[in-house]
Length: 444
Ligand code: SF4
Ligand code: SF4
Image (cartoon, rainbow, N blue to C red; front, side):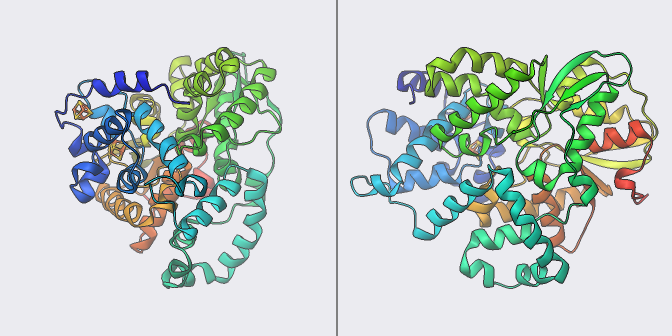
């Protein structure tokens, strides 16, 4: 339940200066005021003043990536995240089939509803997601996925299906998919006991990132607790206006990590870290009984780079002679304001040269499930990001969010180009262990 007085106070901070407009990816795409942060704040204000949510306003809210670049750009400190979260809840409620009969916000099409139902009954559940991997691998082995992705057939069935095929990650090796132990002991003197979130997409499609994260933390003197029975942290639901569902996931995650008795909970996926830092606000709204526990949990959540920078790295780094471009995931750079720490950690690797991606602050179009639900806009943003990445000339791209890695790799593949994409944890791990990334030599 949104506190409308609190939202009015937030919206009042906007002085309509427009400084946020050039930073907004949807304004960059369409140059429409209502597809800018200022325009969306205007729409929020209308609703707070008693207007019904129109179909047009709902569409402008749906088109927002939630990248929070506007918050970084805003000189008045407008907490746009709170406004768009409320707008998403209103949109979900107003566009539900039950509400459509008596409201002006047109309900979603059957195809859109089916796509959303499929996404939200699959992605937050690692076990269900894992059952898809075997048929996906079979299709990839035959090359059918690439042929289908090049044809218009999947897009004609559903644009979501077309986008999903283009984004599907390559196979995961059996070694990488092996389950992590519940406890990975610190190497040398123990400096902290930390919990590790394994995530949904990360654990199924990027298990090697979780393994690398655990090794890096252990090498830096952490006992790493990886509780069994982890599910979704609620990020996808929270960022899509499904507040009750997000609160359920949050309560479950909080209870699990409370039992683990850890000093900090370390997250290697930008969107998950950002959502878990929001637990305090989410449960204060959705379930007052959990507000205190949620606040305590949010206070323990750290992104991997943030945590390592706070601890001060001690593990020896071996040279990694490569030029790498660093991609700022929006939920790390804008939502959590973490930009310096991963760069400092990477620059500390001997012989690694870090280069910047032009227009680093602009979203790649991934944005949770945005690239599935808004494939056209996401495709254009992905193509622009691929162009920027290519302009760096770097053979390696480092990103701290699984969605961004898939989105940029897919956009590069669409141009017939391929570069190695790795997570910050994998690069640190390779340097600490003195091994090439994925035991595969990098191009010079
Ligand atoms: S959100 Fe901030 S930057 Fe954008 S118009 Fe309002 S005050 Fe200006
Ligand atoms: S969150 Fe991103 S897409 Fe949405 S208004 Fe802000 S800058 Fe634009």
